[in-house]
Image (cartoon, rainbow, N blue to C red; front, side):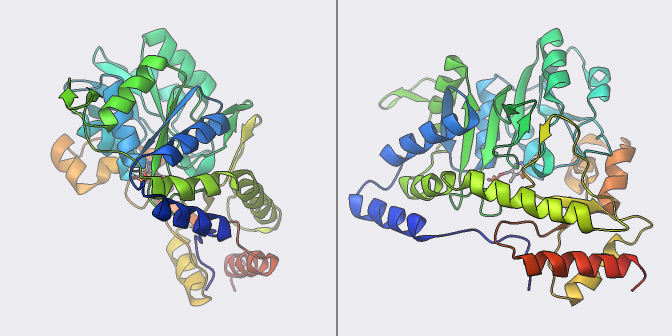
Length: 360
Ligand SMILES: *Cc1c(COP(=O)(O)O)cnc(C)c1O
């Protein structure tokens, strides 16, 4: 079976975890601090704040920016549910803007029409490992006085015009096992802003500045030193992992036929959290079945856009149509691109897809 994801766990991770267990400091401690410093350096930001997962990173970041009841946050509907749910956790309302069908990211030309007097923030998602058009997004945010919270949960090390994902606004990352690097579960917030960084640290730890004095409602969204130990070992491997993903993607770009391969505009560095093709003529599900029969794993990210999830339709109504998103949900297929694939694996995957698309 050629799987969609296979976390790389080496001796470094194993040794690091044993060291934590023997150290006696298990919860948030010195290894979290080292991880935060290393992550900030990778992301080229002044601060990084480690959290229990990517969803709590988003939740904290929104609270730190003061998002609450009555506030609207502009975000795409073509993403993992956590991007929009985090806005609901904070008490705000997600406002969905359609995607650019070529990049699968938020269509920046549609953002301004969605701005109302209640809009407080834009929450772009760097889907599949490629940045949104952050030049346009930062300009719109500046013009309208909006905060920018980047969902960079799939984009560790990705770049827009030489600048890293998570370093434009307040960045949020996931370290779930399928992501480009992992700490088992874990998340990270990145920022250059001293005040936002301090707020995030306080919200993460029960709203506590002075021990057992609680100025505000906070949470326990901390990372443990066990997870940070794994994260530190993984961080050292990020460039290597991303280079392998990019090389795998290049092979597919050059060899796949009959499907639409990822579009990477000039000035973007894609890190291929996913390699996602579009399968034309309603053949996506049949191709998926065909590949399954050949023991090739695939996944559809995401079959149901968030504005069409039952819970969202109950809450916000079902009248909104977002054609580019809805079309993409029917056509996208992500194929294995992780760093542990062999040349034979790549040839097997490409061969099977080409065979199917050529009519077998
Ligand atoms: C993985 C992911 C998240 C959530 O991260 P968790 O660590 O699973 O909580 C949020 N947004 C996107 C786009 C993701 O891919």
